[in-house]
Image 1 (cartoon, helix red, strand yellow):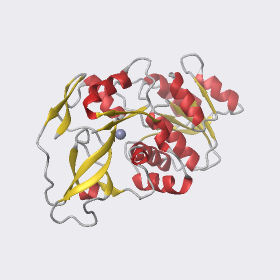
Image 2 (image 1 turned 90 degrees about the horizontal axis):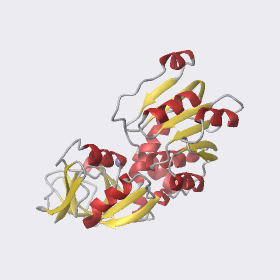
Image 3 (image 1 turned 120 degrees about the horizontal axis):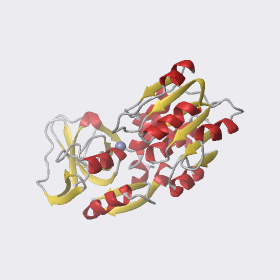
Image 4 (image 1 turned 180 degrees about the vertical axis):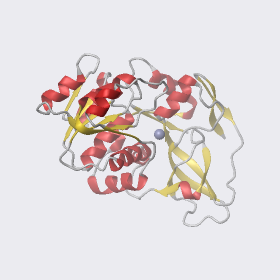
Length: 305
Ligand SMILES: [Zn+2]
């Protein structure tokens, strides 16, 4: 079978590898789609874990079941929450599998994972429906956070984003207002829109100093900053402002797929609207290049083995 192997910085190759066999407690999944995640892009640019299996936003069909597997059988459509999905087939332990409800399309199933990350974030913040929110960064996780907030009934959501196509997508998905943080002072922009108070909660969704700073300076006194970006550099924080304004800051790095699926079924959201392109496995290098380009137009790219 074919699989993409990550050899080092900006070096992904599609190679022929042995088709894996499921061991006891595992199933073999024929991958339908695997979304490219921001964390994969970090690996691609910085070469963090060469030759480790990667690709974890998959959906597919069970084609073989190992011994002692209960509750899954051949033909089941599943979400394998496991690495190694840029390949024709992958094995996944049964406890990391979730069944896909019959009315959910493959495209929608493929973006349950990023929606699940956002679902976990908003849950962790324990947010109420009447609040105001800022999302700094409209990449896949930022946009999914926007959908998650709307599912919670939060209607005032401001989004900052450097790239035009992503600001447009945020508008399309229901952002109250958007701005380019390179051209606007985000904290003044937020204060104008919240009667000088600041937002109740801000989501850092990029992983750089500028967006963290925008979040810390845009939340109200005793507001909350939820950090979900992947930081590769250390960042200085203005601790006096943080302490005197009694800001709460929490980090999140988990997913709540059950809640994501519940929202998809009960709230009619369409998370697949962030998918801007589907490319075959052979073109995975091109896909990574499209997503790391300076002026990228793509938001979520799915790989189809
Ligand atoms: Zn991911």
